[in-house]
Length: 127
Image (cartoon, rainbow, N blue to C red):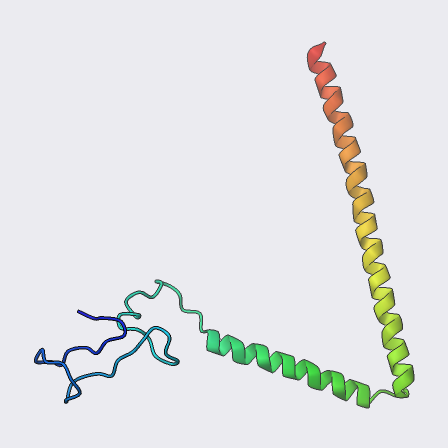
């Protein structure tokens, strides 16, 4: 029988630090699992979070390097490049706002049409 945070008895049933005994593991220790953790694993959970973290870190570092190289290799001065980036960002924000406004207007039109259609159906049923 395994007890979390305590030492496991040796093969002969005696506890201690002799041959065959294992060091204690606690739930909060770094890099160790509590006894029986492998048995409690979720079936089918094969996602490797360590590999994902490495991938995400690589993508972030690559994006930062690409941004730096782009700014260094820009044919304009730093001030002109910053202004151009600000203009592009402003245009993207305005374009996004326009898209949301267009979507809102389209939904309003479709909602009004649907309400009108439902009213017609109710009138047709009541007659």
